[in-house]
Amino acid sequence: MSSLLLDVKDLRVAFGGKDVVRGLAFQLAPGEKVALVGESGSGKTVTALSLLRLLSEAQVSGQAHFVGSEGEGDLLALPERELRGVRGRDIAMIFQEPMTALNPLYTVGEQIMEVLQLKLGLSRAEAQARAVQLLADTGIPEPERRQAAYPHQLSGGQRQRAMIAMALACQPRLLLADEPTTALDVALRGQILDLLDGLQRKHGMAVLMITHDLNLVRRFASRVIVMENGHIVEQGPVAEVFARPQHPYTRSLIDSRPVRDVVPPTSAGPPILQAQSLRVAYPVPILGLRGWFRKGEFVAVQGADFAVPPGQTLGVIGESGSGKSTLALAALGLLPCGGRLTLDGQAWSRDQTRNKALRRVVQVVFQDPFSSLSPRLTVEEIVGEGLIVHAQELSKEERRSKVEQALQEVGLTESQFPGLLQRYPHEFSGGQRQRLAIARALIVEPRLIVLDEPTSALDVTIQKQVLQLLQRLQRERGLSYLLITHDVDVIRAMAHEVLVMKGGEIVESGPVAALLDAPSHPYTRTLVQAAA
Image 1 (cartoon, rainbow, N blue to C red):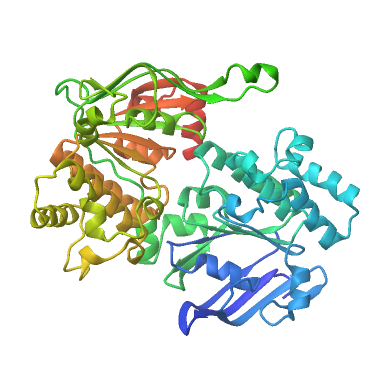
Image 2: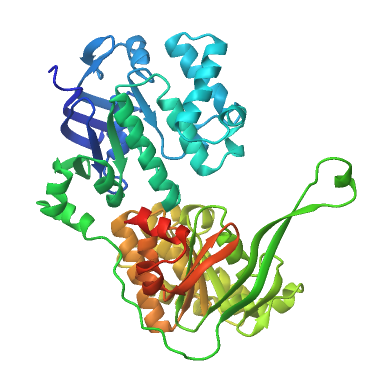
């Protein structure tokens, strides 16, 4: 037992009598890096949370023998008082979304100091000095100033680094990292991964990484555990499992990389969307007396030139804050802009009545279908909403027929889902909700669809299905796409041309294959290398 840090046997977790984790058995050695892989609902996060008994209303059984600094014992049988000593001290956890995991009412420095004072008994002055050092160790610039910042005042990457600093405050023996890079840009993912790798070697801790990102597994872990429906279906060294997967589910995960299946670009008429010297700026207050008389501005997009031809996809890639989403909002006519921007040969007007016809030309599919679909409306109401605005001459029966046709086109039918039209969004999976969002966009027969990170919230196998659907719809309907993403693999699969944005400017553009295979700008090379 002394050679193992954690030995889990017959772990079972149930909610309301329904098993979600079924008889798991796995081991971790000191200093080992193991990835727990599977789709949403496979039981990955539940497994990690059950080890620290952080699941309310759950029935947990089995054994989880752990060797801690104060001795060894079964985590699932320890008294709550003793387990509190293990949490944060010997076993720490990095949660998936730092904005919801960090307390918005306290500075990040105060939250790190709290751990140090409670677990190590440091004085306030000692804890503050240690908190600044931890933030510096994680690569946050100006750590003395950042420790006094609240979570909302930090970028996504800085918040994740602050959470890592908090998790490592007591130099734990085991770190549970739950999708620590999912919400980050590809360049930031690489930075966080390198940071974790360096800190793991420095402190000699073991890491259990929960993820569905197979590129991350290849790059970080030495061993992989594959879960499906609460069971472990395969485990072993990463190189061996990836080279010779034994289980069909493992093979399906490995084969889920997006596949390119798009029509080659052709010159078939004037662009659907065209911009020349596009500029978008936001007003910001000026401090001091000058702010009484005028406002400053923050330029989010500067001097952008691009075009989206009929039946083609223009991909836009860049880190958070690069101006991608601002560019998309300008294309949708939702932000005022300078320069020249035309949609189907017409410019957006300040008169919303005149814009009504243009809004039928362009539709949008957002990143998170759960938050973009109204929970109060049925499927029929959600998908058919655009017809009420743009096809008022249709009767209720004709609208219903078009709704059914749009749903069928995205692969949702009454035979699959009895009572489909009267269901609500929460009754569907993430991939099915994204299909609903696509159907809602399709029903008014647009010529251009803005896709804002359409697959980043989905598992890899579902992502592949949604991309195949979008590719098929483009071939059949001749749709144009403006694709906003930070996933280089999605750009390779979908785009004909690509723009690379940084700091509000287009730093490089061109045909997708030529640009990604031989990038000329250092930033583009960083993005491509981080995704390799």
